[in-house]
Length: 102
Image 1 (cartoon, rainbow, N blue to C red):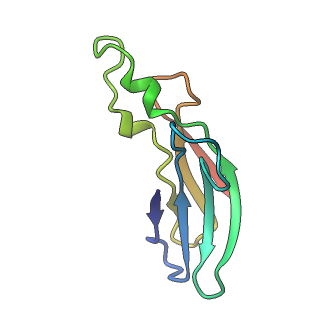
Image 2 (cartoon, one colour; image 1 turned 180 degrees about the vertical axis):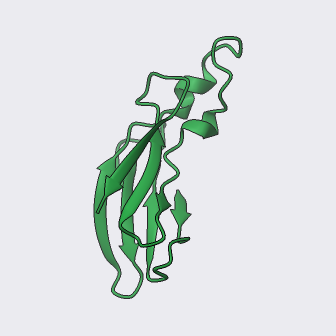
């Protein structure tokens, strides 16, 4: 799980979660969402398909990216209206950048 509370709105944080590859799917796994700290409200934004295991399984010569580089790592904008995150969609040695406008 990665949490970003860097936005100017101190009452909200962006959260990105990751799936446990050994267990079955659980609610909120591989998701990006915003949590309002004052009232504990959760706004689900996206379901990502980041797979660091794919990157780790590739030979270094063909995939020079660290497995951590393709994790979603959601980041909240200063005004809390936008969230950025990356995903490799299970099949790339690079993370693509996605922007969610709330």
